[in-house]
Length: 393
View 1 (tube, one colour):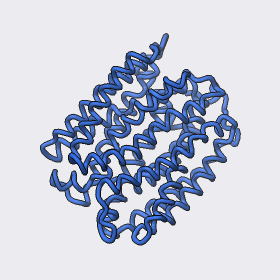
View 2 (cartoon, one colour):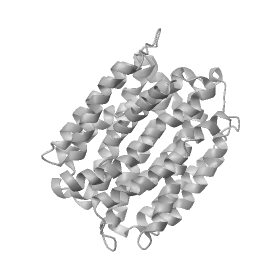
View 3 (tube, helix red, strand yellow):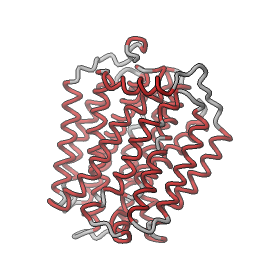
View 4 (cartoon, helix red, strand yellow):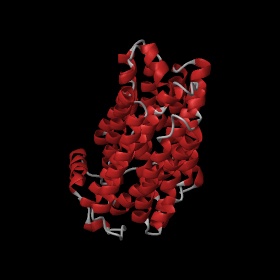
């Protein structure tokens, strides 16, 4: 795969996932403008995540049937529509609807990842996945920086307007620059959906999926709740200043890009275990937010390094094991991601309202322990490069 193709797919991933996460640093202003109480602010994120969940089950498997280039372009257009609805929302109901629509079609990320895995030679799959999925991290974390600046200058609605324009432009670039990816002799939609459901009974798939659930619930706990204490006493940071914490997270996550190469070398399981230990340690630093911003920054860097390392290792393992159904496999795996992220986002604002920052901190650490327990006791074989014909549905 050429560098330009990897870059385009990484940008597609970044913009699409930003449509789900860009509101996190501005939850307070959104809630005040649209009349949503503090305890319910997490639903601005959860609405997109629940839409994402529906898209994973219903849309991502289409990548194993149809031209992925056209799917990517079409989904980007509909992400733009959802963002436009959110930008123009007269009330909370319209914002929730727009975010849900964008979330449904933000699963273009998984189509792009599956496209990358399917066209990559086995020896380069991990490296290419590392580059393309880095776009996801840039979208999740970089969007916070840009969103904070835009919110300070033009208000929170400008964030979604900019994302709508970017998604539309990328749809055109995708059609112009990506080669066609027709699926000759592909299975019917019903067969693909049955294959999707069947994956949940596979031990390798289920263990990696459950790790992803706890991993991204912990991730969502930090990033959906952190803006609230930073905006309050004793820090009183602006939206732009809060958004800058995304730079720390971005540095950590990009530092884990090499985890794809470690997967190519057969070390995916060891990388997962080590990264989860680091994730648990990061919560000890993040828990000091009320008195130390430097410790918070260190915790954010370590947390995002660990999350990205585990995520790339998971995808490398699963696309190797289920090589003839990459779209279906990635879509099914990301169900766990979506459920985890939505659960973390919804729970952290409620816990913060009841217990302050201690509540989300304890939750994040407990979720990490859950992921470590699955990793330790799942019985995933040390040799991760399972022969595809032995595990396919």
